[in-house]
Structure formats: structure tokens, C-alpha cells
Image (cartoon, rainbow, N blue to C red; front, top):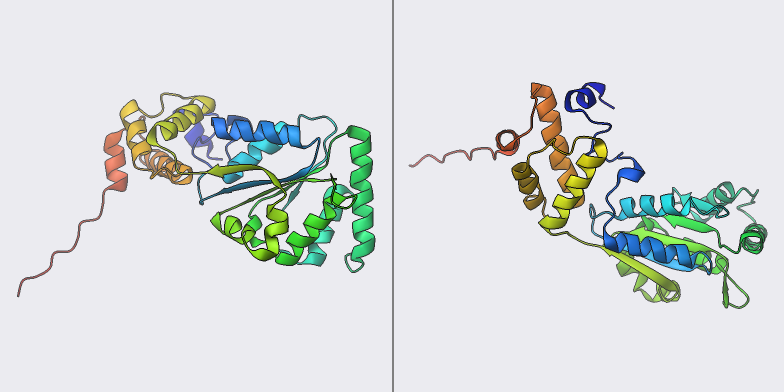
Length: 276
């Protein structure tokens, strides 16, 4: 973290950084509703899905969800970090996340130990353990199928795990394939992140600046300009803001304004073609 930047502009953190504190993230109504639904679902288990184009807020939604669910006293929550892993490594990571010793080369025994662990958790807390999987479009078919089978009991009449899958549009397309229809039919809650209108991007900027401690860092005109030129994409919006902030720091400017915006993002002049 650049201490000079924070001191110069009176900030607690860089409001345009991907590492914004979770409690400072902007949470629009669709994400709030999805988080509430998952809070209810952990008592029953099953699958949930978050999809959307890159940069539209999927990972931020997972961070907000994990933060809210962490308040549930007896909930066990695991985050899968290598969705692209082989089936053996998938079992190794599950064993690490849920605190059980597994033998990846003996999947029957490993599945038995995991399921017993989850059932014990359910009996003790009345909550199903929760597994979050980001970038789930990278998961192999065998891992998808194994996860579906692990998460159910009593001839598929009982869910013993809550799973939230998140990924880009490729994940939605994969779930429409014949091989994954059994899993797709089990999805109970859905959130689709989309391109946002300038008004919502403006609200996001205002929220982040206020949470960072300097709501007047950018003048209203510049806030509006950024919101209108981000193509509805949250990641692009934050990248634009960060480019401005770094340029202002490099020039040691006291304020950020539209003049700086045009200096930073002015298009390069096109070379003239010589006439014959």
C-alpha cells in the first residue's frame, strides 16, 4: 500500500484497488438478495450459481457472501482455490478445507469420511457446510460429477452440502450440456451480474470514496465522466479511477479534475498519410 498516496489524499485505503476491504465493498440490491437467500439455503443445502461477464462483480459478490456467512456461529465454510485441479487434488483440497485426512487414491474411503464429517456438522449445527468455488468454468467434468454425488444422500433426497459455483458465461454454457444437466437441475439460487448503467456506477464510486475516507476526492463532473466511460463494467471503472489516482500522485497534484482525465486518457493522434 502506497503510504504517500494515502497521506496526500486523506485516504484509509485506495478506493480503486482490487484489495478494497470487504466491509467497504459496494453491495447493490441483487447481491443483497442473493446473500439473504444463501443464508436461508445453508439450512437445507444444495447448489447455487453466480454467473456474469468478466469485471461485473462476481468475485466481489462471493467476498460479500463469505463475510456475511462468517457471522453464522456454527457454519463451516471452505473456499476451493484450484477448481482446475484433477480429481485426486480435488479430494486433497477438500480434506484440507474440512479438516479430515483423505486418501485421494481411495475415493470410496475419502468420500465416506467427508460425508460422515458433513453429516456430523449438520446434526450438531442444523447447517450444511458451505463450499465456495470461484472460476468454476475451469472445473473438469469428473470433478463436477463427483461434487454432485458427494453433496447428496438418502437416494438423492437429502443435501448434505451447500455449494456456490461462480464463473463467467462459459460456466452457464457448460451447465447446459447433457453431461451436466443433472447438476444444473439442482441449482436453487441464481445471481447474474451484468453491465450496469452509469447511475449505478456513480453510486458505486460515491460509496467507495466515502468508505475510503475522502468522499470529495473526485469532483461531481469527474465522477459522472468516469461512470459514463466505463462501458458498464465495474472492473474497468476502478481501473480508470486508479490510473487517474496514480497520475495525480506522480505529478503530486492536490486535486483530481477533468483536466487530468483528458491528459491521462487523451487518444493518441493518428499519423497523417502523405498524398502522392
